[in-house]
Image (cartoon, rainbow, N blue to C red; front, top):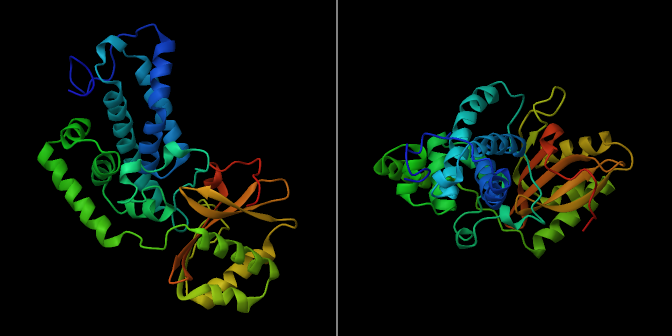
Length: 316
């Protein structure tokens, strides 16, 4: 039994312990893990924070003496809240204006959000491209895959968390793993050369010249925009070098005067963040490279930028 000594994992409430400081300390100890799970499940930092707030309220209602393993109890609460959230989120995304992309989060000074060290070779589970792939899994498949393959929970633990049989969880994990292996992004990893390309891209865009920009793009480059579902934002996926280059130049012409660009670590990868003169993030741009050319571009703007510092960082 993962959560309580008596009453089963489903019973999330018992008598209050009265020791709120101990509750808070225990919750804070596991908070990085819980946020990492919730963010990967939901693809949205704001929704993940809401889940953690609700989980803490439920945690406060527990007697610490009655909870044998706080880690598994809290993981159970957070996972089930995420599954509930996904049920409503899917309906909302059916009416979402334009493509849906995850909310980026800064990871330069938050190593706890990165992949567990022993899993980093297998999956870059925090990248925007990978989170998009997770969206193609069913909620149950996503939960099993993340808990078992990314966070190294055993199948009997996953089964108790999801209230499913161990064999059912194995089947869900196998289907998810096969889908991930067949479709996961295989772009070049973030390297010094990738940083140089990002700097080169910024300088090329600032000049406004089309030919140098075209040379950076693959013939079959794809650009996916997410303006936060807001009216007036770009909502069409673009394909091909000419269409993408024209779009980039059009965005550049419409940008406010005094726009500046910087490189930040977002979701474990280097990305370009455009800021207005008052340092507010205007959009985040993720570039994915194959064979030395940009093959995929993801542009995220609007309310999706809540997870990026609005104070402005230094340009690197």
